Length: 221
Image (cartoon, rainbow, N blue to C red; front, side, top):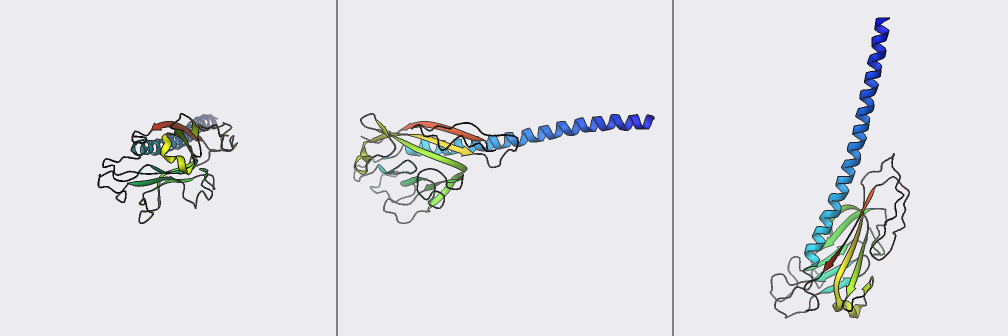
């Protein structure tokens, strides 16, 4: 009888320990996913902020520099960082976006749900460069929203109006690397322009949305 009682008490204790362990393990996995998302989106946004602010940097005034691509899903610009009168050196022609393999229509939405977000550092003439190299993983969508010289905002500046861009508002949506079977995402994520990116998704992936506005100090000078 004493042995049965001891076994029963031991079983209750072990069950409580196992329940606590599983709960803490699940919490750890969730927090790990959240931290990874936050790191991805903040690293990308910090890079955008520091580089896009320099768009159009042109100390010699010998060449034309500035925005060369401005769409909802792609942003490209040139700058003369070393002041040698050209934009063929490292990091002097930059384009942000998903590669065509991950976003065939270049609308800023990853075709497969999520993908690595890239940075192309080719030259202004298209020669050389390294193609789209990933700077952050598990991105679902990006939107570039442009501030024009007249104070209006647009997702699609005309090719003849690229010189009128004065800033850009960036919205980034990142997805967790792994689903959470105990979570259903019913949130609606709205970009700066008001797009909802087909949300709510009603799936098991956690997401984060970050929006910031960057004023380009060298444009319009």
